[in-house]
Image (cartoon, rainbow, N blue to C red; front, top):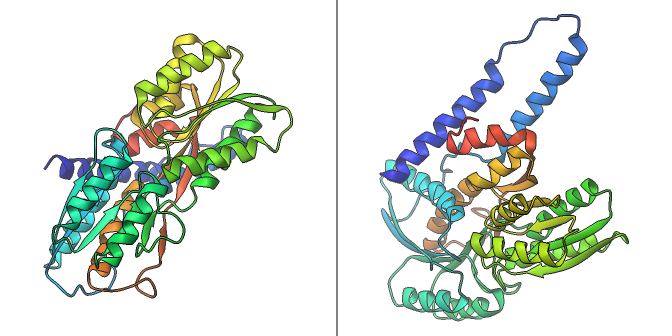
Amino acid sequence: MKNDCKIKIIIAALSAALCVTSCAPVPSDNGHGEEASANEQASEIMQETVSSAVDFEHELDSYVPKKDHYNFYFTYKTVHPWWDAVALGMEEAQRQFLEKGVTVTYEYMAPEGASAEDQTQRLYEAEKQNFDVIGVDVADEEIISPILDEMIENGTKVMTFSSSDAKDGCKRIAYVGNTHNYQDGADLTEALCEKLDYKGKVAILVGSVGAPCHEDRARGARDTIAKYGDMEIVATEYDMDSVDLAYDLTLKILKDCPDLDGIVCCNMSNPVGAARAVTETESDAVIVGMDHDVEALRYLHDGVIYCLGVQDCYSIGYDTIQVAVKIADGNLPGELFPEKTDEITTVIYQEDAALMLELLYGDIL
């Protein structure tokens, strides 16, 4: 019931935001017509950027399920608001299937802290039960990928979803989520480099050890910084998806390198921890990072964070359920669904923060 309310609030906020775009009054020409026109055009671009970052408008395709009930198991890296947003998309797909007479039930489980060992145990336990499909947001590709291969060989239908796919060559059936984590890391770091005039000392907060999405973003960051001779990586730390640990690590980095110029944050938790530390120490370090945490968006609005790469979690969740139904029916990647369903990331800046806060949280600044 609580999540149903969240969906209604989010959709209402989206409608309001779109109304602002389409129904805003046109100011009269007071002698500054060209300037007003340029401002209006910039505002329209900003609103389009934000409203297209998360797609709440989904309808099931024409595929007719072969059963009237499906039962899935999904496990992900760690309990965190990022996966709560994915769950909202899952619930909407579940609701639409129910309207068509198809009941979709699922377990959506994760540990309190990211752990490949914990995920291994969960997968072995789930395999003993009669789930139609098991979905995995991979905690560590080196450890988990062979387990997924083993499950497939045992006849279990396995897919991956969210932000972390299995290792290349894994036998998992399909993946729904972010297929461009390396590029996200490179894009955010390029924005940072440009902001710093391509010179300075930079730290990287990665996230969880072995998590493909975090490692790929960090690799994109390192490769981008390596292009510029006057830029240097002075620290790389793993915060294990913990805001508190990211805060502590940033304080340590700033103590060791008080003239730090920038921080690249590779998950949703570490921009918040880094921003808290930078604010507390009054550092001038420029922060770039991932996703839509409400506190991170407020730091973005205040200029503490320079930019954020926002993933479309809602679409990830929705598409995961729709693909899982097709996999459960024995379909393989092809015409009905691709091997990898790619979801978008949108980089937003300070001028986008207020609208994004209103769109996602109904938070009007």
